Image 1 (cartoon, helix red, strand yellow):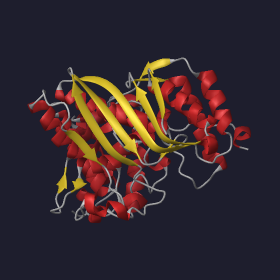
Image 2: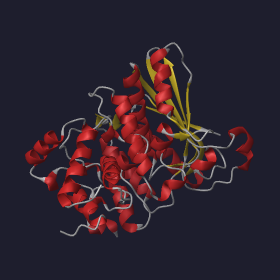
Image 3: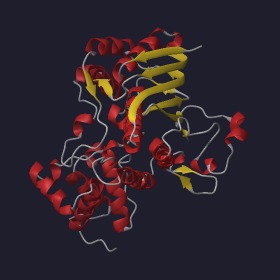
Image 4: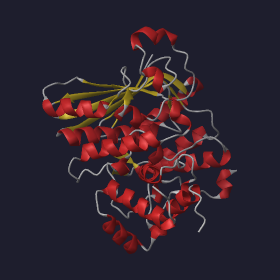
Length: 294
Length: 92
């Protein structure tokens, strides 16, 4: 059982995948595979429709963390910390991400954040491994290797970062008892082919209202970072949701109608920090009229 | 380091922001002037997270993270300075 989506950009891919989920029994699909041919492009009409709906849901579903696309994307690749014009941009990005991650003490402390797992995955000896740095080193040193670039973000049954430092994925696999909650992104794989990098990501559970669009943007930014810092071009982004769903929220079909009507404005995504002094507030969820919040 | 006053908090925030952008604190001050003041230079949550981590080292105190703050507490330089000062018990 699988559903395959193949679209030009992030917005079109999200919209087509959402359409398939609306049609699916229970609004759930097993193995929803989404291929995005130009992941550095999006449809801002689709994104705006989604952002308005997320703001509406924040108003009607208080207590649920409905975040903007930018905030979700930041969990994978925080663009404000990437200044590609500076010397040693990758090292600077790693250092800034590590410092912020180490200081983080939110409710996700148990497993951390996606960017935290990418730049400081707990190793078996108690030391952390910078998976992105390792991937970049191989890409820079041996461009003829196509498939040496794997980055796990979780393993089945894991309960905490400390546990992941002392367990064997192959041994504890059958003990998977995790229910809902993070991390949902399980694995990232990078493939180098003909001068381009392609990124594949696997989600154990992929929620298409709250997370998928922001995940696509964050993964595309990560792909751009790895390609830019290793002298490669940007290839395709392929995302598999082994359990993909539209959450149980009011107005699911209305969102499809609104996003479809708004689609058609193709635009590049941002891939690095805005200049010092630039505005950021436009990336927050929009303010919606009280009548839409009813 | 002994905490002195709100000005020390602001200096730490400016220094942290300068490090993120790879510029001098003087350059940050120039940008603040050009946008109209501390309350008009906007911050992203990840930048704020880094600045807070920098301030924690500077003052040796545990500070609230952006996740624990409201957006309004880190949306600008002015807001973040006020939030950190409040967390450190500076009332002036």
